[in-house]
Image 1 (cartoon, rainbow, N blue to C red):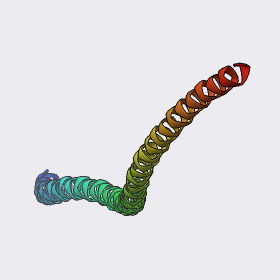
Image 2: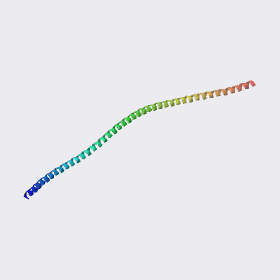
Image 3: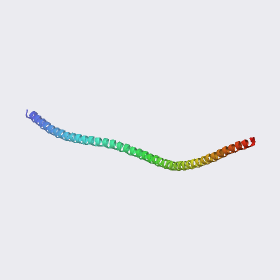
Image 4: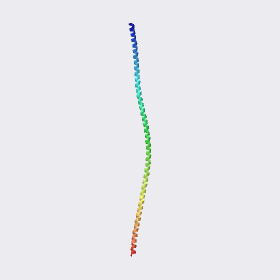
Length: 150
């Protein structure tokens, strides 16, 4: 009975040592699990940051492209504005030329009107003079006829 009790006691001591060893191992594994969870959570944060970085990179590329397009559009608009200013200057020059021509033609018309008026006055004067001569000749003819009749 003693031998059997000693064996049960030895088995019990081995079992306690094994349980203690298993508890230590379990504690170590729990620690490793906690560390792994921490790393996982840390990695999740890194993954989230990586996703944000990717999204920001995409947004920056989009903004750069938009900026490039706006720059090109601005360049085109500046060129169109430059062309419009050239056309405006050409048209302004043409307007000045046409205004000068209009002034010249008005002056010419005034000169022609004055010449016409002068010619008309001269012709009227000559007409009145010739009409007066005609009437005088008629009177002279009548007088000559009257003298012949006598």
